[in-house]
Image (cartoon, rainbow, N blue to C red):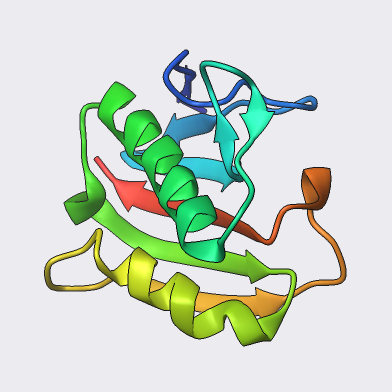
Length: 126
């Protein structure tokens, strides 16, 4: 199997035994990102829009490290602490794509790492 590990200092370092992303067979699989500022390593809290923007910036930096951008994303998964946050997260998330949106599911979960409100993972083509 051919795989390449992707990690960048411009996104938060993994907080467990995983990498930010793995490329295999011209696909990139990005681990779930939460609202951590990679410079300070602190969780960004406050309103859900601010939190979601940080998550999307983290994902963008990982995509950039792989040499691609949001146009290459084919699938995302959004995990929410509370489904009542859906419309605000959806609005911010949607602002990062222009057309040909990726496939996606959004699920509510009981808890997320570091007690954040949103986590997003992505799969993209190279």
